[in-house]
Amino acid sequence: METIGCGTAIVTPFRADGSVDEPALWALVNWQIESGIDFLVACGSTGEAATLDEEEWLRTVRLVIDAAAGRVPVWAGCTHNCTRVLVRLAAQLRRVPGVAAVLSANPYYNKPTQEGQFQHFLALAREVDPLPVCVYNVPGRTAANLEPETVARLAAAAGNIQAIKEASGKLTQFAELSHILPREFKIFSGDDNLALAAIAVGANGLISVASNETPAEVARMIRAALDNNWDEARELERRYSRLFEANFWESNPGPVKTVLNLMGRCGDTVRLPLVPPAAATRAKLELLAGELGLLKHVPIPAGVRSEVF
Image 1 (cartoon, one colour):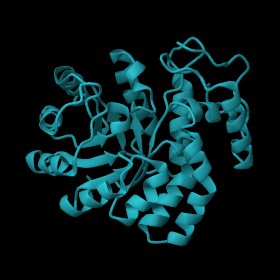
Image 2: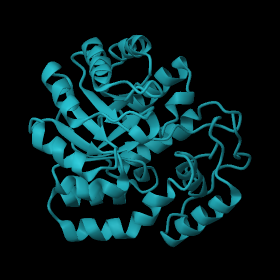
Image 3: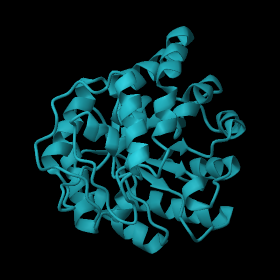
């Protein structure tokens, strides 16, 4: 895997009736690429993949690939807590031209052991081979931590397991990963607010939530850090650190969709069990977005409103 830098875990816009807003998604992809993002991740947790049915999931992946038109790599999110279902879903990605890699999070709820996670990800890797696989460690959502030693076992057992999105929140875990994994194995921060620290101890980039709202700026921050231009990287982090935090004032992607709505980029509809941010949170997000100069775009068409489905 050659991809490094900043990738956007892109939202999946919904219309007011709860259906996928394909024109809005197409426009978001183009804006992301024109802004200088390095790659895109379709149907991750920020893309509300857990609420998409199988047909919507595959169609959304295809749409992002078509909109990107080869300008940047597109990774496809594919996560399930049943290994048999995961393998069945993943098999479909091998038949989708343009998938650059598969991103898959720890099995959620089951709380598998390290051996269980090893077998789970190994089954995925074997099914999609030769597509590269990026394992996604996000214990805050899944209740299971993927230990660095297990990642090293996976890298040795399957040549197409080539990256990790690390979102444990533990800087020591980033350091250990960079120490024990092969140099060609890619490490991406899954947390915007830890990205610079992660790069300082050996990470290769960031898979970002905030780059949905500020793609040019977050991509420039990561590029500066990778180029050892730490003054520029730290200045950008200082400017946008409040946004990194604000995107998690309530469950992701509620806040980021609210900001995108305020920016005129798409509606802010989410699907149950998520609900839109509370009015007080929305007011705080609008104030922050205004302070950061994000509210400069033409409003979305009349009639696009927030609903829950």
